[in-house]
Length: 273
Image (cartoon, rainbow, N blue to C red):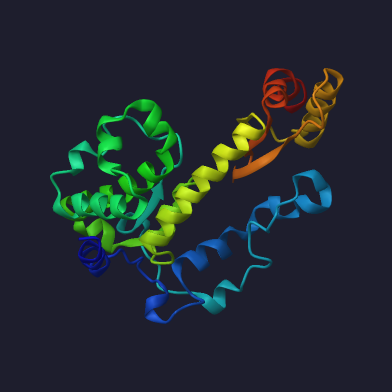
């Protein structure tokens, strides 16, 4: 059954309009989107505040000449951009309305055969603690299954997709949609990712905090002050640093549980605003 389901689903797998399949590897809509985003100032953060240095540059190193790559303008209202949710979007009962859609039901069954547990049951009936523990796989599968409902109700929307993105875990769903990552590899990756995160949390409890930054924010100083204050209170080698760059002026801070709460409770209030 697993092989047959996999074959059926892959025969209708998602393709992102303008993808590498058409041979335009270096001129995809997503490539142009990244190039056009190169004007944001955060790419120069490395030279100003080393602590906020990006692991990889968020924007292209330089902007190509638009005159050389100018194309016929596409009306944004005639296109679709998909944004997939991340961990934390789960709730007991999600995906219940998708079970009546054959392709979505097959996707849940295929996913269950790969990961070894009933994904549809956990999404539909929980219990909540099990759904929380297995939320990454549940959210990934439900996100992709929801597209089957879109395919039934608004097929033109998927045909007009120009880009796909996601919040953290949602990035993996976007890669599957764009055919850059197979469903089976994505599921195994997400299962491993979840296990690694549980192990890390058990070894060293931590917390995360989303912060919106004022133009004159001094985030690196705030993080340093939070770590110093935690060390004064006996926390051994405290950690508090930027974990995610969501978009300009919005970041996620993560670290030891006590340090993160300190950053949210006083440091960010005093030094960011």
